[in-house]
Each structure stands twice: as structure tokens, then as C-alpha cells.
Image 1 (cartoon, one colour):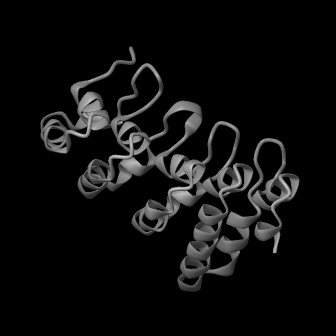
Image 2 (tube, rainbow, N blue to C red):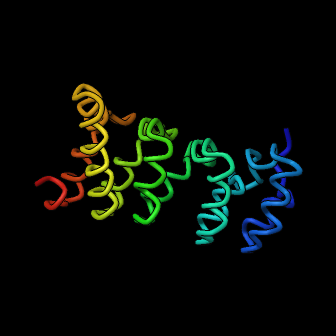
Length: 169
């Protein structure tokens, strides 16, 4: 299938929330299509810092959070990479299972935050895990914190390798 910029991609990237939402209602399948750069409309809206458009997309279809783009990145991965903590807890509350989504390198959002020195994002994710696990079980907490990427590194390994003592403590 050919990768193209649909009108939804264009409107999501250009801060035209009203038109984007109209396109979503007319052609919901466009929301999951990747453009030639490997981005879905929600990825573009997030990368362009169009918070209203991102919020509207998620209010219509929470599963857009899990659409895999370039290198297997979901929206949560980009949020962790850029350190945008405003959306982290909200997206994790809406879609808790996305904490387990992996990139093509086998990394979670926690790995990405640790690898890219995004302490606030790392801290936000860990705090969310603590809250979420209180309502679930400790085995899940251990599983999340001990997930290894393709190189066998946990998020803690990456933090230590990047000399991030705040994360290690």
C-alpha cells in the first residue's frame, strides 16, 4: 500500500482542528494511515504541538494512541522522547496497555525517557506505574520495570549508561 499524506494528515499538521475532526468523521480510516515519513495524523499533530487536535483525536478514538509509526513509535513514545509530561499520565490512564508497546528496537516509553535524559518524563511514567499497580498487581510492576530492549537493557541500565543518578536513585 502506498504511503500518502491525506487531507487528515495535512489538517492535523496545520493546526486546523475543526477540519481534521470533520475528516475523521467522514473517513475514519485515514486516522491510521501513515504518510511517506511514517507518521499518522495523530503523530503529526503531536509533533507539531497541536494539543487540541491530539486531544480531539483521542476523545474520538483512544486506540489512536497505539498506532505504530516510524520505527514502531506510538504517540506515547514520542511524548517520552520529547519530555512532554502534559500528556503522559493522561494517555496512560486512557490506554494503560500502551505502557507495554515496543518500538522496533524493543523499547518502551520508559526506555526512551531514560535513554534521552528526560528525567521528568521518566519520573512521570514511574509514578503512573506505582499508582496503576496499586490497583492491579506487583507482578505487572516488575514486568514493566524489567522489560529489556533488543540489546538486553532495562530502562535502569540505560539511565546508568547515560550517567543519570536522579533516575537510578
